[in-house]
Amino acid sequence: MSVLLHPVTDLVSLLELERVKPDAFLGAGPELGWGRIYGGQVVAQALRAAGHTVDTDHRPHSLHAYFVRAGDERRPVLFEVERVRDGRSFTTRQVVAYQEGGAILNLIASFHAPEDGDDVQSVRAPDAGRPEDAVLSPSDAFFEHRVVVRAREPRAHGVSWLRVPESLPDDPMLQACAFAYLSDEDLLGIAMLPHPLGGDWENLMTASLDHAIWFHRPLRADSWLCFDLDGHGVADVRGLALARVFDSEGAHVATIAQEGLMRRRH
Image (spheres, one colour):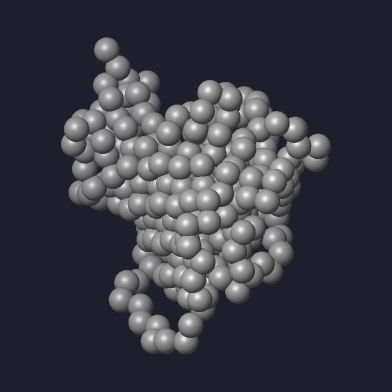
């Protein structure tokens, strides 16, 4: 396995994969000192690898990924793409991400050629104010994250703003991959809220188990996106969180679901 030569200094360079054979790509990320790879990185790179094998007029409309085991941020990742189906309207790809020792992610993605049709939105964006007024939540990852502080609600709920601070090309596939990178930031924390130990990271062993995205309308990851998040309870040491995502004009652009492990430390 060769090693990427270019340094990863921003999200665009993170999404620049090296093609090592027709349907296999090598990716790398920054060493943030976390030890493990940020889940959004490997999901975004897997979607990018799949996107390199589909027609340019097809755009991702959904993906479903399983985190098989933690990745090592110090090592490159090999993404092998299987061409499951090539259709006129829909294309399906499966991607397995490998490091030394085996698979770390299994992802299946579906791509759709845009069609004319009815556009009806039945959900509304939350009252989240302006992103500039929300509380900055610093991160070493390649995004800006701001949290809306509101009165405690009776349910497990949260609202945040996320964006990539750098300007990205006008490429719908790249924008979707950049959004996939953002999408892993808040879900596990929200899924934990209904647990009796709440957000007690010290006494809970946690991990993201799977991750799904549905893309409803065109979006830009380099513009502010509002995440309306809900935790749906905990059972069998697993918790589920959903996020409805809106652009700054209130358009419902995507929905995310993630299940996480929450096991008490003994």
